[in-house]
Amino acid sequence: MEAGTMAGWAKRVGPSPHPTCTRLGEPDSGHSMEVQRSEQGGEHDRVEEARRLRRLQVMMSMVMSVISQDTDLTLEEAAEMAANARRAALTMFPDKELAYDLIYRPRLQRLLNERFRLQ
Image 1 (cartoon, rainbow, N blue to C red):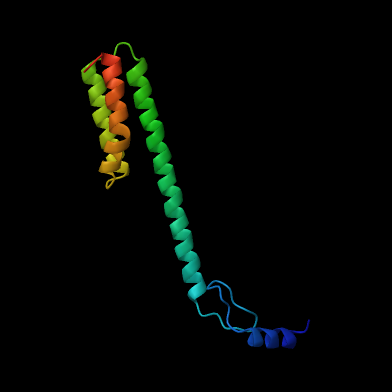
Image 2 (image 1 turned 45 degrees about the vertical axis):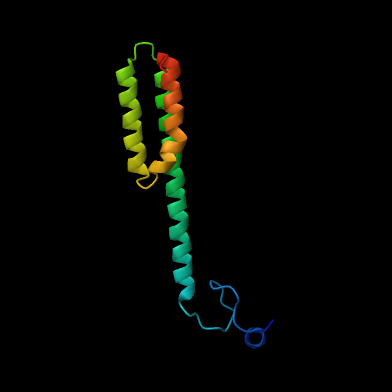
């Protein structure tokens, strides 16, 4: 297809419906780079949050394993580990205190009750 024919086709079709696409012969408005940057920034944020969430899950799994398996661990040490885990979780996710208290606090409390026969 000749260049003149392509340019004519682009003019007949009209502007691109997608903000990151430009048609042949259509001037670039500059918005496509902004959209791409914001999409990349959003993707980076999602990846970073997923990484922090996975780190939290591994940390909580390790804390719960130590509490349940270490026969030399005292109740005070286990309670301190749970408190430290909570502080670390809230450092990673500062605005998620309620979520932590709904998800992990009951698990740790149940584990402490079972391990140390508390009521």
